[in-house]
Length: 224
Figure 1: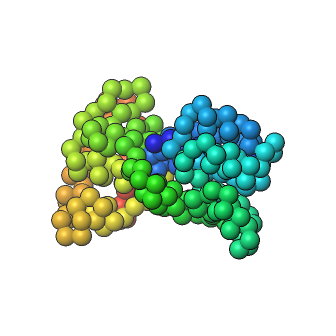
Figure 2: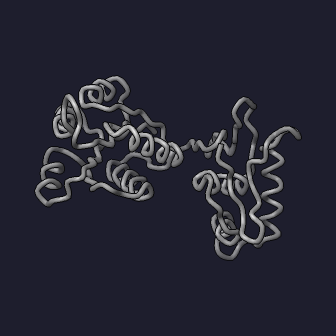
């Protein structure tokens, strides 16, 4: 699933792209309104995350252009949070309006909600984090420079949870719930599952450990 990010703040655009890639989306990034239109016409993204204040052509102009030619869902971003600004954005064709600052998790949730309303499958099939690419539908993971490896459904659930929360420490209890549900697993089963997953990710002794054990707490997928 491909998302076009139109944001002239370079630091923020990097954060948005990282957040959406970690959530499993493919991203395209441009920094002005004319580039947004050109990229939209060439790449046909599934959704546009569109800043209101842009050089060359503002977000309202970009929104009007897209709406005149297509139905691509648009989420507008702005520091303007007045009722008038929100109503104007929605009346020009935006499907949602988010006021800055906002949390990455809020953006991902709003994107998925807009995609659902548009009848577009909102669960990406590919998840990328660290040097790993997880193909959810095929239960396969590929480490950069290596061939893809088959996983069991439980291994896929575990790795997916770790990848979505890359660099964060997850408790054993939280991972057990994510993989087996509230009543389906225990710490011994989790430890065995982590061991099996590690053995598949680390093809030789020289491979760096991807999944770190945090003593007394749980596990973390190490950031590259």
